[in-house]
Image (cartoon, rainbow, N blue to C red):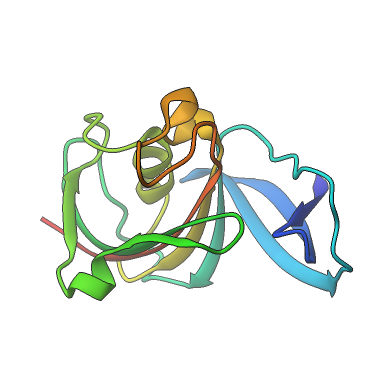
Length: 153
């Protein structure tokens, strides 16, 4: 199945979705064209989309209950940076599948292999939803994360 989405109001991406017997649904994204400025809202699919920036080892995936160590940069769809562990120089740790982080991270990072760097696009229901995060994240915001899975503990 192939879906076409518009992102950042300036690029056209083709998303290829498939299914991997070992790791479930997979999504790959390819930029195909720069577009003129658009004034319409961007319509995103619900959930989390993953685009591999750099493959990992392809063999070691985090398990539910396991602590992962990641570096991340978070931004809004307009490119505005919200937060970055890289800027702080300190990786972030959380336990997979325990609800310690947004749903998009629990689902997206669990599909990454050790060493992988990926771009996760999380719709509002997989991020901060209707409440947002006052002072940082608007209500009903789609968030984009550049995540690198450093290791599992």
